[in-house]
Amino acid sequence: MQQPMPPYPNHDPHHPPRRRLTRAEMRRRRRRRAIRRLAVLLGALALVAGGVSFAVTRLQADVPSASAASPAPVEGTGAVSSGVRNGTGAAGGTSTAAGTAESTAPAQPQNALGLTAAEAAAMLADPRMVLVNHQVPMPEDYTFDTKECGSATAINKTLQTEAADAFLEMQAAAAADGITVWMQSGYRSVEYQTTLYNNKTQQFLNQGYDEAAAREMAANIVNPPRYSEHNCGLAADLNCPEFTALEPGFEDTAAFDWLCQHAGDYGFILRYPKGEAAEAVTEITYEPWHWRYVGPENAARINASGLIFEQYIAELQSIAAAV
Ligand SMILES: [Zn+2]
Image (cartoon, rainbow, N blue to C red):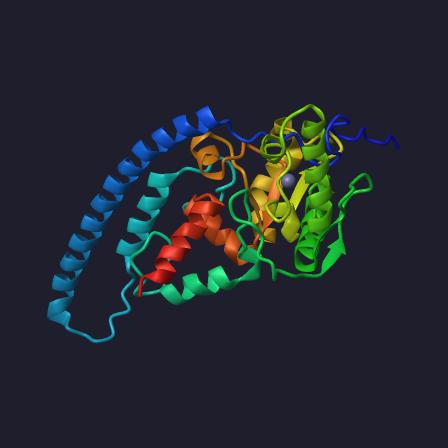
């Protein structure tokens, strides 16, 4: 069997040349985002107004029957929340479950996610839902066990045990469909991340940049320790025999298609989706290879919402805070 070429011989072996947006790009995108937010806010206001008038109509309709227990299906809630989903529609890519609203329970709370404050708080407390990005470091006390699930050429072959088991199950299911999926890079220890980051910083120091500049430039290429999602053992860079690089071209493979359809069932979401709106939220350019384990129930909810992970967490926080 032919050994696949290691991706990116000139870069850190398992760190693809992720491109963080430049300052000018970020500024431009922030401006556009502000405009978009205003539009979303106006849309949300319209939805709330619609919801209130719906509730009023419904209350009035219910008054004559005056039955205490009226478990009539609440179509209104579903309609409102799916309207919000379509309205945001920020995520490209994986939201395959979108539209399959699960709101069958009566008395659904009136928010975009259809969750109670307690449910939102429980999701936030779920260690599989930890948010790690270049602004939010992994908590100091975040600990876990790991298990191997990487391909033969992978350098970082492990994930958190539950995520590794889920990946192996997903890999077997893909294989049954004639699709090979490999994990190329999983958990990176904080120590390892420190080495990567310090090496990159040293390269810039050697080129004559001062410490601060060198650190900032390094951070654009390698996340500082605890600021990489790979540090929490829930991020998996996936590839396949037909496309061993960790590059956007992975999206043209049958493996990527399969993942878009099925990864959610195994608890994985596409973490850095395609498109300007998504990239403005993650501040990371599209990475079709980078999948994040959150657990099947959470993945179903996130995919159904059409929100990016950062947005979903923010939404949970506001629902959990509203008592
Ligand atoms: Zn990755």
